[in-house]
Image (cartoon, rainbow, N blue to C red; front, side, top):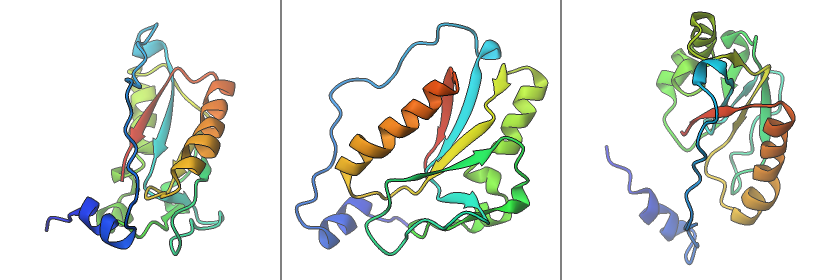
Length: 155
């Protein structure tokens, strides 16, 4: 089934202004991947069962949840409602591949896996909150943790 997302958003939120980025967000790596500290980021609405669920009723929250490196996947859940997460409910690694990244660390493919990883709920309609609040906070956390690169999994 094809979902015409842009058309659906336009029908619900007439006049919504889509973000257009004029510059490339890519930054070249300064060292090999096997020497990098790597963080995982997902917009799949994944969180610890003991954390508050993401607000799915409104226009989406511009907040993120922190997930520890050593999390057991049985302790994770998904509160996002804007995509079909049946497969991710069976194996959260579909949307938050923490176990696969622990394997990459063990194999030496990546240097080290960061102690903390991040998730948020995609479908945040407040571009200002996303750009001025959440993104800078997340970037600060990554910088403070000395993360060299992150792997982003969109939902």
